[in-house]
Length: 254
Length: 274
Image: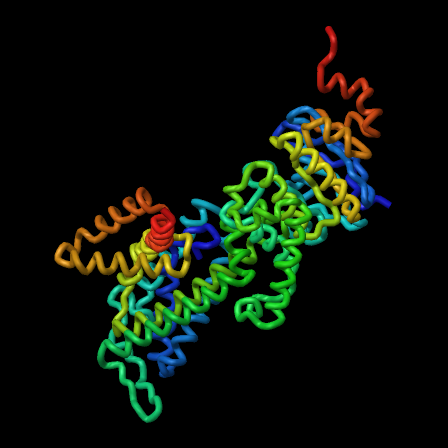
């Protein structure tokens, strides 16, 4: 039983078909890589799944429930959480710890008045949120930066923090948009280990990434998009040999 | 509410709603000011809820223009409605607050002093409420929205809901201050509620510093009002003075006056370290 089913999803921008008739199944606990040349529709697909865009046609169901046309925050609460590429990935004027705490707060139960008047049940919840957030920072290996403002962190830390914020929102399906882009090799190896550990926690992950080494190393399955169409799907070694994929990336010999 | 990353130019409209609600309650229904004050706050919050629900789904410039339009609609409604709202001529002889009986003492509102303590009390309540909110998860959620719509939504914040909430809360306090204003001046007319009044508040907030949303507006208001008093003889130049101060703050002190204390503290620590 697939956790996420995408059926015949298309997204047009004016006359341009950014996605056309995509069918994708995601199974629980799976790590899938989504690759393709620039403009292939990878980020558009993330935007459609997370509710940031409404698809032009098609059906998307998550745990057998239709999520098409729902608001982004509702989809997030159902358990599909995404990260963002560089520019808008973080809350820049908050500390690393506060970034993660915001992710938790959305799921905490105390209402408006309880939180304002600082009741004891709210205080207990607040302590729990703080502890859990520290755990997540530690898990991502950035605990030392907890009191730094997000905008002052080095690039690699910012990317890790982006993932930490998403984890705080307790996802079942995590959409990672270029998590290792711009990282040095040590950082990117560390991030690969983290992603493996996220999978071990039972979270399903889709990964968009340009760094082929990362994708080929850790993904069990790879989906290749080109011009909004799925041109290949399979194990890394199959994808590496696939004629269409080679053609899409390198062009044909004249 | 500045925290959520939006400028709101409709405050004068909210004051007007608060002021006229309170005046109608005391003059037509004959109830006491002490009932009218919270009622004016609630009524304005209610109006804020409705208006906020409609206009908070827009962003950026559109939102600002709509708040501006709202304030003007309210003002023009008052201008044209002569039967209950007094039209351009305004409403005179608004009753002063009834004397408060407190431990056998009676505090009347015939001099300015009791008004001072009343507004101080309202200010403290407002500041206390905002302080509690700022330090609770609401504060985090509001400032998250001010920084990135995308991140906020992707972790499950329903932007519209919290924007409307912020709008309603700001309307409540604007309503309270409108009510106070009416019973302090004992005469109100549409001229008291022009968009210039909203602009003044925004300028005070920016000069004071948007990063600290309690100390900032208070510092900005004190500074600009004192400045305006010093140049009292040159009344026509007050907008120019405001203009100059806002430019100066943006150039030399982007964090506003409220950030001065932090800068000074940092200097002191540095000079001690050396």
